[in-house]
Length: 389
Image (cartoon, rainbow, N blue to C red; front, side, top):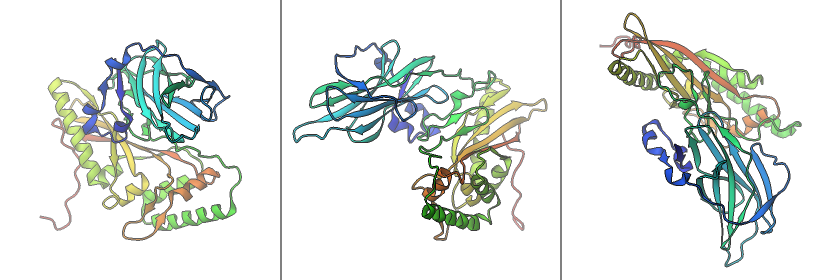
């Protein structure tokens, strides 16, 4: 069965909404004949990975990239880039259908878009069996259709879902509807790189000096937050290597994270006990550290993913592998402002350091073990405040 997930939904996907996001697409998997079109002609190799570039022969003025990316798991992500577009006359109309097709000539998705310049997302398509898919753009200009050529083909190979994790397939538990399109493996779930990274070979002296000064400001601010400054300095050392840490540290430091993890484990233990199962696996769950209550870990990780995989022990307790992972990077327009101050570390300035090779994004890899009772209660609890009741 093929499933279509509207792009507007995966941008706001949460675990609680999981049951309502996916829409069975039996209706759209029927064979659809492609009508005769005035087609675009190939314009040479596309500059963007996963894309093919086409100029129109029947409709002057349009140059479009058709793109398909697969990532890890069962999802394909269709996009188009309108590089140039014909100017509309007063009475003319224009729209673009972003279509996804498989090798058997089945249309799996059809997303309307306007003809404005830049990036346009199509609906995400997920499949349950190995499927070769590609993107096709159909331009409707003043009532007539003009088709691009196909994007490069992507072979989607969904892993076999298994909550217990016995077969070692992790991709099914990647939160594929995140707007940042994370990828998952046995190490963790990680947001993808922002585009146009590491692209500059020669730095602008003024921009570089400004970015370095902002980095020094960041160091001074984060110096009182041990994990935040450790992670920030690793970004600035430019190696890009994984940074490993003990995931039980933020579990013990953040009551919000602890409550979320404990509630997840309790529900899974109950389900396992009812099914007489000896293992469970949550898959990767989205979590966001609070900037006020968890300032240190918010500055160190921000948004992240956790996963708990439990195994029943001979003494009746549950040993739970606890992963906490994220991708450390800065984003244009997303800044870190220190609570209760006006001090800001600017995302655009930090990305400039990355682009010129003075910094490097990296994977934050947290792992540790937690223990729970046979009823799903944690064996570690925070100490009572001094002088408490």
